[in-house]
Length: 232
Image (cartoon, rainbow, N blue to C red; front, side):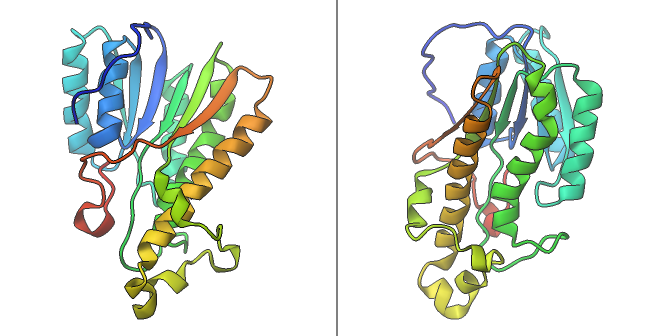
């Protein structure tokens, strides 16, 4: 990704930002911009080698004026997310920004080790869990933000979220796939991002933490490569 335009030159020197899915695409572009503004970074990624390579480049681009930490996590695994959150809390005395960016759309019905449908687990459960695990630390910042990457794809969930079928099986049968089921499932998870953010913002009203989600529009990334693997 390239061509991001700065809206201002506000410095983030001394701030600490945790970003999931920061090794490519939107997450990498965000990490590069934050690094350029002087923020210290915590990259949460599945691919350790790739994450460390990105960390070295980000640190070098800043003239080694920032710290870039790497935390390894499989965003489909609640156990892995909890472990990464504990490592973040042990390493970082402050967190000012949390960017929930990692995401995926799986074309086949797959279950996580927790027994959850994979797209639902990665796109909604993961940011929900990580945010709640780090929220107390975010509350310690003077002004903190939780930012979640959503999508105009939430409009595909025109009938809302089917809470009677959180396994999403209706979307992955032969007929479901023919009707674009995996896309509708993805739409449900993006709607969940919007609803979670709205509720979080309401609960945090009057505190020093604010919550936002955004639609990046159509962006050329390697999202959904390898049948739905997320670039992290």
